[in-house]
Length: 367
Image (cartoon, rainbow, N blue to C red; front, side, top):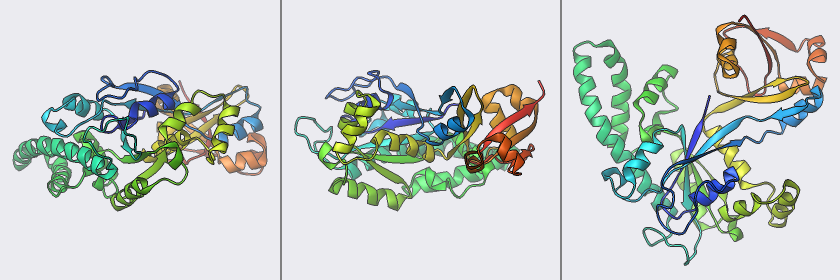
């Protein structure tokens, strides 16, 4: 099961530099001119989770395999993209394929790096892209809603089910608000309908403030403005210096920690970004643990045991019998599977069990 966060932003805000550091590759060309990223580049990265080492130590695992999340570097957008300006059509098509948006905003001053609109205004940049996405959604949804209304009027059941979500989304767009405002108000079946509409502004958003090295710890006036904007939207923002992260990506782990400490940073900004992306998608982790390996698995919050088993292999879901489950804290505190079982902290869960973050699970199934 793959989860993708699309890295978006205006040209020259540091998207590709951040992506290169994020994936520790040179896959995305970082250069000081618009549209240096023409095709989306995808890189999978491990999600930092200190629980893995503790579980592996208890079980004596030979290998640790973290869960992963994909980041996609998408070509820069400019004003008028919804009308095909710049690489607008390609940008809009690529962004429909991701699950969440990581919106990089330029929060640094540098006369040597041009800004496509000739000024440093991260809130204005965010508004530019949001407006383009809303215009595209509005034009698309107006056409589809009209057709659906006609079918619903003739008692078409599918149309009657979809129409309320379409109309609620359309009302938000007409009021100048993104569709993701609906996410926390819809029932699970309505969320599935919304997902099927494939609207650009239905994706959750994380704002990333790209700052200079000097502002990496405390931020600046630009990051404060972004934080205020994010709070008003019910969104989140984090501060990262893409330049620092690019340097850290080239260093061995022990040297990178010393480098970060010298700058007054407790951890790499990329680790915070990865965890924030994971949280943005409302994902959780469960573990399989044994002498061969300790492994983390990614599932959406609310997934039932058979669905979680299916992430490992479809046969596990089809032939699901039960899930032998131990909470992470119990597994680590008590010293593994046998002591947890003796203490009454291990249990067999059935098909209706909703997997919890940190569960250590052994699935039993028929092939």
